[in-house]
Length: 274
Image (cartoon, rainbow, N blue to C red):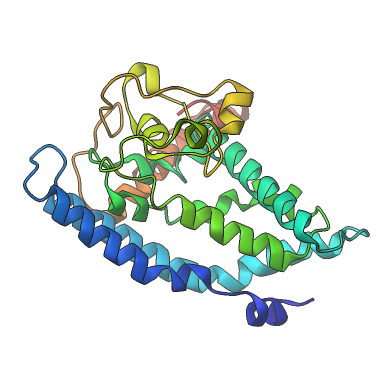
């Protein structure tokens, strides 16, 4: 399999989902339009839209490179896993687990936090917050190498990757309160993800799961929504400029690395906590 074949055979699920996403945003806006606490705020909305538009452009430019990256590791290993119904489950679990660790490390090391902080920059939580994907997030592709090198068909893995990404859209809302208990035990829900976006001390660095909350329960990073979340960063950003929201941490890192007195100090800047 080559990149051209992969592009031809892979269904563009994210494109198909656009109408559902747009309808959901309009519906949420309509439901909350008279609610001062939860309604859409104009400047925040346009910032999210600007960041999302930039992400779409970057994704389109890098799509072939992302496919090539995955295929490189697929062709690097000598074994293959036959595609069957259980392969899809295994592939999804692998993608979601890689996503969990990428997300976890992005909160623990400053250089990776720079690829993720944009997503936490809003002091509101609604469907458009899901658009706030960092323009440098593709650097985290290295965390998916175990999946690409598993021997599972890349079509399966990239499809699972798209589904995992699309799943994360609907959990960015305050309109949906709680799901059934069995669902809350297995899957990431809006309640779980509100905790993740909360800057409350007890909510920081909790609930990293993308679509499965089982990883957080297994690795001790789970937190129930037991108080009202306060969204945004612990040090609020007084800007709605999409470019600044994407690169302000990178600028700070560059400044601190230049001022570092040794290689060890520079590495501490890059890989120390945010």
